[in-house]
Image (cartoon, rainbow over all chains, first blue to last red; front, side):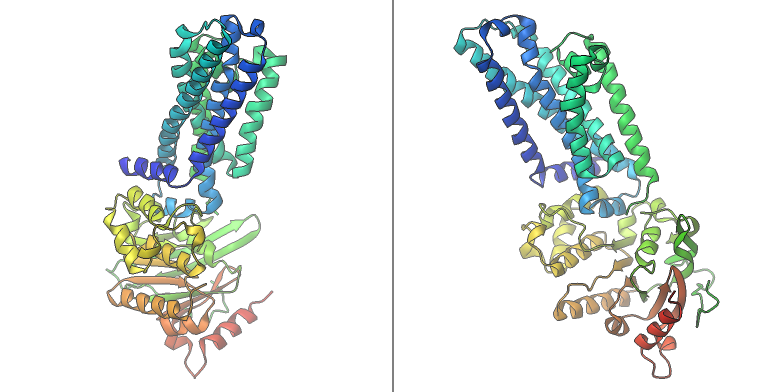
Length: 242
Length: 253
């Protein structure tokens, strides 16, 4: 299993995909900080809950990009055919999926920490520059830890979705549409449902919203991650490789 | 088995010897369509077997079934007495290349091999050994997207050789090789077999096959039309091409 983990880690490091995803996430978060903290009037970002809500972008970006890392870990192999040598070396396919889940979750933690870290650092500087009282210093720990945990679980969801969908463009577009369209629409129009979705639960886990307790949110996300990765696992075991 | 088969003698191993590779009634159906239809054959140690047939005859599907990438609808395929997916360290017994393009274009040749070696639990020194063997050491740091088709073929072969296997299964390995590369591959395979190892190689290049292999399997529409020693199939001064075209034309739908 150590060899499998090292192999998956090398696959992550040896193309520029992970770096590209990281830069895209960094750009998105930096842009969002600029839009929110600089453009919004001081009165709409003065309370603690307003400030936490503004920080949602970091959590969302961490979850989405971690999901993409997981999805691409499996769909890139299918797209480029490396899945064949991979499964010839390791015909017990479950081992490969397990290693992908573990390595993607670790990369997801890093992505979650970076996304929240960039958000926190930039917003803190911007608050100070505008003379807005920063209400959040007590929330940093939950933002970072919860955001990292949510991103790790989204990475597992990404592996599961990727293994089920198999088509790389389909999986990437599907995850983006889910996070950027389905989640935010539901949270706006049917908040009772939206808060229970994987993205909504992640926001509660990181403390951006306080719709669910952190424990319930964590449990929900673990269930989503377990269900999607189990489905992807079973599909990978039973389907033929083209 | 086809009743029209000529010189179908199933290469049944003498008792007491483990066949390197054996399939019995191997069948793969997609709905009504039988891509592979009841194929039975076995390979003897130390031989090179050419696996011939027109495009879409079922060659690649057969190889995928042998290698556990696809599940047969009926029948079975065993390598060294077990299903591929049940082998403990398959790369130490079987090396296979199914398509010449199974690489991430942005990954370099060395990292491609290292990822496989790590997963197989092989020492990373093997990566340098096989790079040298296929003469790719100088290009190992380059991304695969800069490789020519011939270089990709050799990188695929390098991956198959990582575990120093006893059986090599190659799908169209000569595609894209220049004349020097073709000769290199032929010499390599003959040396490999001369050391008591076994090769199964699919190909369209009948003239090349005729120079390299000991025995042939000819399939068409998923069925095995002929199998046997090359010299037995091509007696009476008939070329392999004559035999092949006669068999596959007779079966045309």
